[in-house]
Amino acid sequence: MLTLDGVQLHSTLLLGTGKFASAKQLIAAVKASGTELVTLAMKRLDLQHQTDDILAPLQQLGVRLLPNTSGAKTANEAIFAAELAREALGTHWLKLEIHPDPRYLLPDPIETLQAAQELVKRGFVVLPYCPADPVLCKRLEEAGCAAVMPLGAPIGSNQGLQTLAMLEIIIEQARVPVIIDAGLGAPSHACQALELGASAVLVNTAIASAADPVAMATSFRLACQAGVHARQSGLAAACTQAQASSPLTRFLETL
Amino acid sequence: MHITVNQQPQQVAEPCSLQQLVEQLALNPNGLALALNQTVIAKRAWPSTYLAPEDQVAAFQIVTGG
Image (cartoon, rainbow over all chains, first blue to last red; front, top):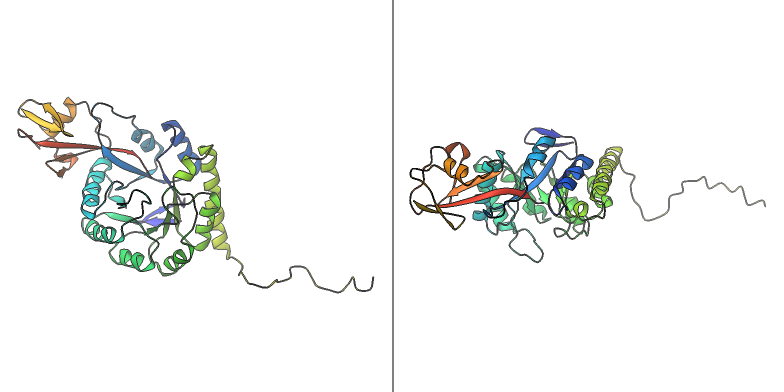
């Protein structure tokens, strides 16, 4: 269960809508994933070549829409993009993302915090994509963000939880939902994040770029359910030495 | 009068509201956002926001993304 802005979401899987081969495939993947919250982006309209309307089919599915500020390189650009997104979709929910460097697309912590502070003042429900930095995540929480979205690995890299040790600290300290965003490449990564105690995960490339995106969406849905279930079940502790799971009686010594 | 939309020249009648511009350009308002001279204009204000010569309109739309 993920609660954002007082809204309870039963699915712990957020789905990014980029990179799918077609609108039809995207819609099928959204359905298969069981997600209740999908991300969207904004771009400048090309008056000569208007693209297919992807919005109406998503609205018909009844999933919540989470616009992002992708493309913003500074806090001011992100705030402008946020105002556009609010008007375009009629939602004050926002995935704040500011990544000036095109090679690694790593979020700029300083611009992100500045933008978050201003956007909260303007009434947005801010979900910031951010580095897996426990201090920054606390600062974003103190700024009034509705959740924090630390990265597992660079966007689209499919490397999994490279930031594992820091994510554990972030989850331990957080008073707002922690949504692991970016870098999750396999259902096992999503499962691991939820076993750790993350509130949700956001996945795009791993599903959209799979050989069968719809089947992979199902796989992530099941992995997320398994992760949540495992967390609730109380994971057994890890230790260095063996702990026998069969009785060590000496019944063979008389042979 | 002459204005620009996404830096492309456009000729519109006078007076012309943002709402009329959207209709003239046959834009789908669902997922559309407009900025007039770098200021975002709320959808509810489109009918009452009138263009002036040489105004710069920027039009944005929702697209897929992660």
